[in-house]
Length: 313
Figure 1 (cartoon, rainbow, N blue to C red):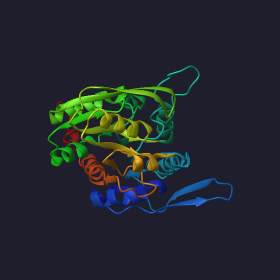
Figure 2: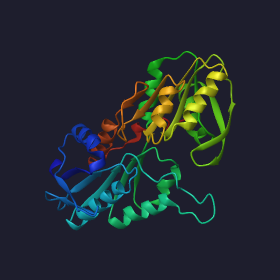
Figure 3: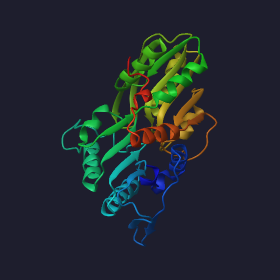
């Protein structure tokens, strides 16, 4: 069976793809990206994929070249007669555009799903979509994994006596509640009001955090404005310490500076997106073994239910 498996990495995720391929037990295939002087590029697969199960690994944060490279790789594999094409997208970019929340705006996540399907993808593997309903935007199977499989055991091992799980906003309350139920601890919530994207006008706390070790859980950290303001608010309301567990380390703009100056004791993220620089407050947990195991179970037709720690919550 292994001779019929091919694993390729696009440029953005080569650092992670190497670890996933090692965990899976199969070497990365050879591919090439040729750059033209005007910025256009061409991808080519340098070995046969005829009749093969092809895994293409690429996260799709900005710039759009990352998404375009994945689309071109899917098309190249399809035209080379691959049997099945599985897009492994650890971080699914554009996922925050999952609905029309105002007039005359695009639903970007649905558009990306359409583009992937039009290119020829047969299955998608991803992690912690910003909105669960994005799975329904696809007409092909989606394996939606959760960093909670890694984060929840990590929190148990920390053995914090006065642990409280917190959501940084109302949208994250479902995720935080699942953690709280699994760990059998209390829940707190930050309620925030925005005037526009990435700018917070006001925040308040729902729940008791006095004398507690607060852990904020979220799917991503972008500019870190919400996260750092939440940490300060919890400390101001008597919290002993504040940590954060966020799956995708987008960390744009002033994020690193804010985190370093913040009252956060630690920020734990995964390597779905590479860190732009190191930080004494940021710790990275790899998702390579998880994706490698899910890929292996896919090819051997096994259940992946053990990767959903909150399945029975």
